[in-house]
Image 1 (cartoon, helix red, strand yellow):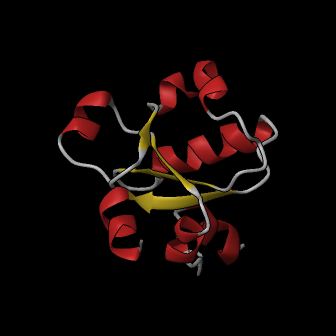
Image 2 (cartoon, helix red, strand yellow):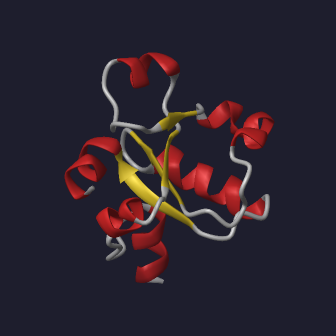
Amino acid sequence: MLNSIKNLFGLQNTDYAELVKNGAIILDVRSKGEFASGHIKNAINIPVDQLQNNLSRLKDKNKCIITCCASGMRSASAQNILKNAGYTEVHNGGGWMSLNNKV
């Protein structure tokens, strides 16, 4: 149960820097305005409410994807959307500022 809660909020012990080094995509699911006010370098922005209709932008379902947002809630939703769509390696990175310090 505790691991499920940690995973939901992006608190699992994942080496995000290593994932990015190995080619992981950082998917920022905040609004366009939030993204424009600051984001992780090279992150892709697809707002969570538009993700389902933009899955074609994430062509390789086997590529590692790290989702992030402002706090970890929208990125958890995005993680579920991606997993339900067949993406195999999706991590909830939580809030983008915290994730930025880990990559």
